[in-house]
Length: 115
Length: 108
Image (cartoon, rainbow over all chains, first blue to last red; front, side):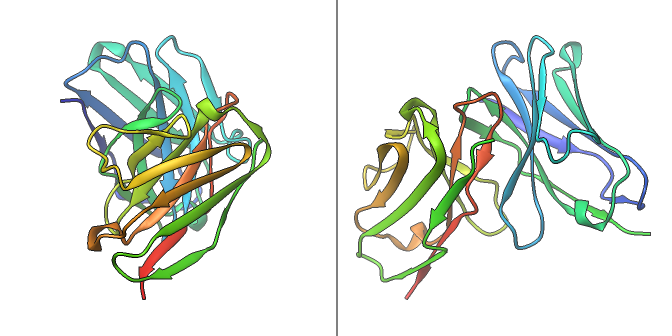
């Protein structure tokens, strides 16, 4: 059974970099897109970006200048870096497997931006 | 970027009633590239429908998707208590992904 698990700090200071990792178990990185999505409190889903198993990336234009998604196939992990965070980046962050549609999701991790 | 607009924002219905949710795209989306998700409080979204009309594994047949071009619908024929949730559409026709803002189906 394919599972995803997000991990990383739950609290980040303003202007610092938010770093999260998603670990895949029960499956392979190959052949899929790997996404990050976030959900601010009481709001809808916002796509952040994806990395293809080959290493190609695509990001939400509204976040592109601050986002990097990377892949470590040896560890079956992919990661999110979001720089210069503000309170507006406070959200639940999800990782998801993607064939186009997202069929496997992590449970999400809450990140709060606060001093 | 393709913008998805869902309506209504909130749908108030009783168990056993039919729910019809709309998702309108700002430009044409191939029917192969439209998905629907259900999200309950405190949970991750769950895939319901891909390719506009194909139910995901384990999804009951009271859920059905349809539409083409710029207008898509999700229909729940007879609402069960566990169906009260927020529903999102998502397109994957281009290289980017976008979600609609969601429709909340609440108990009347």
